[in-house]
Length: 71
Image 1 (cartoon, rainbow, N blue to C red):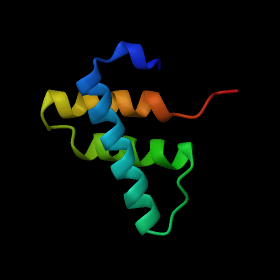
Image 2: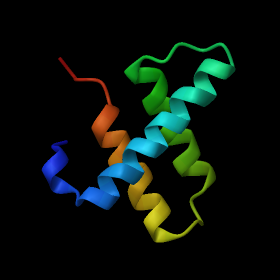
Image 3: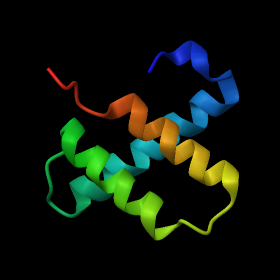
Image 4: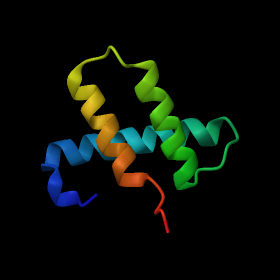
């Protein structure tokens, strides 16, 4: 996903969400590779399926931004 898809405020929020995920993983002794971050964000999105639409949208953008390449 390219950064230019998001406005500056949304991009900042997506970066905050990703940073929070990295901190949670590190504090729990997990690796902070893209695949691990993506997995945590996907689990969080599922757990918060009934949250506000903006929160869901930020999680979806964060997942797209960090998901590992399929190559």
